[in-house]
Length: 205
Image (cartoon, rainbow, N blue to C red; front, side, top):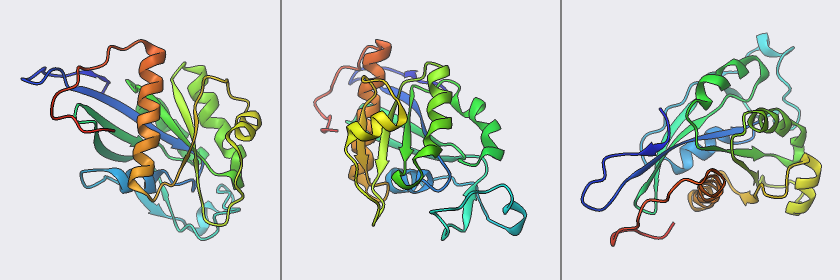
């Protein structure tokens, strides 16, 4: 599945975009997709077992009992004319081989970041930068986590000034919508994609 324009219809072209939701283990990717999807989300979660003790770093997320082994999938419509197909990537290194398939045809990615485990953001950021895939960084606001300014996070992750850094609560639908809208606007501007004409029935993003 790739991004593009579908059958124009009576109200103009419908833009469909494939979006990645990336980030480290336990950062909230499955939560985000589940919180915002307008269809029943697809999950590929499996229970964490003792077999993964030597592979999985659970420091900071000790209460996590499951992990995504393939992908999460959901769909959301923004502004009436933008349909986003969301693909959550697995966060654990042993499942990173899935990233190449999931990233094919993607418009861009939301990289969820946890300030308690910020180093986990480097692998997905490096992956996206090397493939010239537009992305934003969304700081998932975990309860009790120390708050940081966007500039501090930008410096810590060594990302370019044009990459948006936004706050996001992966549990809150409107917060997730804001992050996804920021990504779509950033990616469209960077790639020079023509925006679909708004219709009279469009609602604000």
